Image (tube, rainbow, N blue to C red; front, side):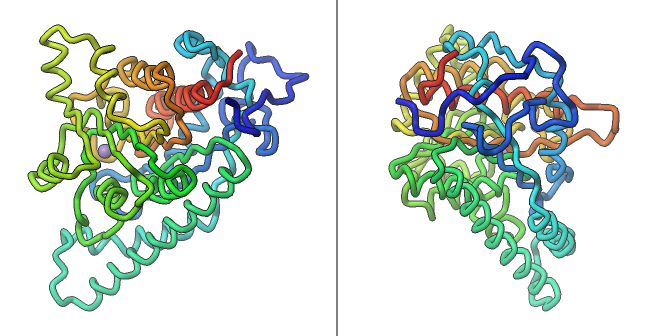
Length: 361
Ligand SMILES: [Mn+2]
C-alpha cells in the first residue's frame, strides 16, 4: 500500500531522456521538496574519521556526478519501477549549521586522534574529547529531528553522509516510527566498537550504539564484513540482535555452489518486515570507492549489492528508509568516479525503497 506521500510527481515539461541539468537538484531532476516522495538529507560530517578524510564532501560529490545517470534503470525495471524519478526525488541543501559543527569537531578531534585516543590526565586533550562527544550528540539530535520531520510528512527519507556516525539519528527516527525495525547493514567493517579513540559516537561504533541504545531496532543483519576486532567478532556472535554474514563466509558459500540468490534469501530471512538499509560504500569492492576513508580489499561487486537490495523488495518486505555513507571524492578534481558510483547506488536505494512501498511505472 502506498503511503500518502509516495505518489507520482507533477511532470509537464521535463525531458527524462535528455541530459540532466548539472545546476539542478540531484540526478538533474526538477523537483522541490514538496513534490518529492523521496527526500535526501545530506549530512557533511566526519568528525571522528580516523584514517582518510573527505567524506564530508561526499554529498556534494554525489550531487555533482549524479546528472550523468540515465534515469531509466534496467535492474529496477525488473521490479516494475524502471523510472523511480517519476515519484519525485529531491536532495535538500546542506545545512550551514552542520558544516560549522563539523569544522569545529574536526579541529577538536585532531589532537585526540594524533594521541591515538590515549589521553591520560592531559586536561587539554580531555576537554577536546568532551567537545567532540558533545558536538556528536548535538549532530545525532539534529539528524533525528530532520529525519522525523520528513517521516511525519509521509516521505521516504534517505540520509547521505558523511561518515557512518550520521546513521545513528536516522535509524533512531525510523525505529521510533516503526518499532521492531530491522537494519540491513552493508559494510566492510562491523562498526561494533564500544568507543573508538575515546569517541563515544564514532563511525566505528555506530552499530554498537544502535543495538545498545535504540530499543525499536529488533535486528541488525550485517553483510560483507571483513575488517573487525576480536571484541567486535565476539559481540557479533553473542548478541541476540546481531546476525553477521562475513565476506569470507559468503565467498566460501559461493565456492560451494550456492547461488548468490540463495545467499540473498538467507540474509533477508533474518530481517523483520520493516527494513532500514544502512549502506557504507566501503562494503563494496574498493575499486568502486577508492577514495573512501577506510577501504578494505574484498567486498561486494556492484551487482551483488544492488541485486540484494532488489531481493529485499521481491521478498515483500518494506524498506522504510535508508542511508548511504562514507562516499568521499578523489583528491583529483577531474575524477568523479567515487561520486559516480555513489550516485548510482543512491538512485538504486531510492528505487528499491519506492518499489517496496508499491510504486510502479
Ligand atoms: Mn566501513
